[in-house]
Image (cartoon, rainbow, N blue to C red; front, side, top):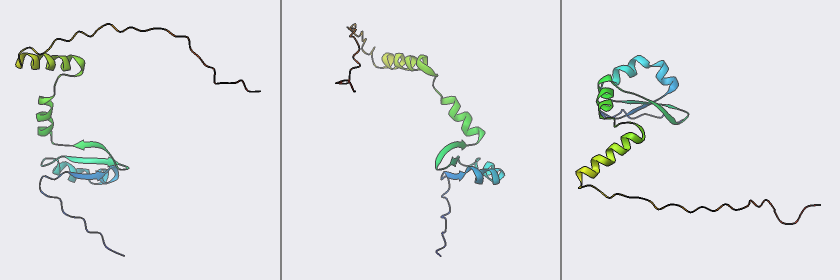
Length: 109
């Protein structure tokens, strides 16, 4: 049987652990999280990231406003930055009601 040797991670490389590994080695993972984020996966899908409080605060400070209001604020900011942008007023849509047809061909006997 061939022995599998895992490569040691490069400094700053992202480490991945299964949920079971993370539960068993939580204190070691928390020590490592001071230096680099750690991914936790369940059945091959990434489910969580463990990172230092400093890194979280740095990322949280960059967060844009949430939702549509944040998006529209960014649009207005870009319009101001690039000379006003283009105002767009879509035309009115014309919709017609049609009777529904549920027939599938000849009736079955």
